[in-house]
Image (cartoon, rainbow, N blue to C red; front, side, top):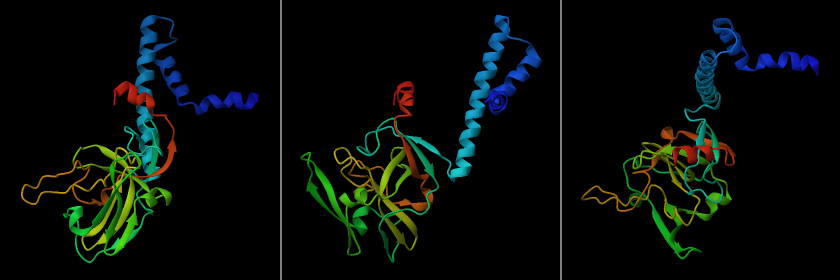
Length: 238
């Protein structure tokens, strides 16, 4: 135990900061020196956190290794304040459909048929999605534990943490459709914009014009850490 106690301090990166500060400014006996110490501690903490974040990104294969859930759109599976650890958006789990035409600039209505029903909240919600005679029941995307991914919304500019509905391999690339798990607040597919062909404006409040290209996915959920990010919600009032 004494051996561990003796050498464990060298694992602490602040040990080296203390050595440097002691050499440069001496012991923190005076208020001025104490202030200098605290400035260095704060700056080093920021730098160390940044390096850890970048290292985690390299290891996990994504530019966003950690994401905080900011809304209730994924309840009851994820809650506001949860931290989602992400890795690269590979080996995605969802039904895959192949199309022999491009869909990158197509509205959902142009290549898919949807059925809606009244859910337990008395609200109209999507029930199923049919593409090329293949029907996906929306209730099954959670039951089958389809991958949860993060992408940047081109309508809100925010990062969205939602679940895959389907993967589509088209002639112009591989795309995904997504939806939040909360069937009270997120009752339509994120890409169901119903774009008016005359004005080019979305008729639905959607989260992304057109399907999301797989290459544009920021990452895939690896694990969830409950409520760890709740302080961020308080301090940044989000």
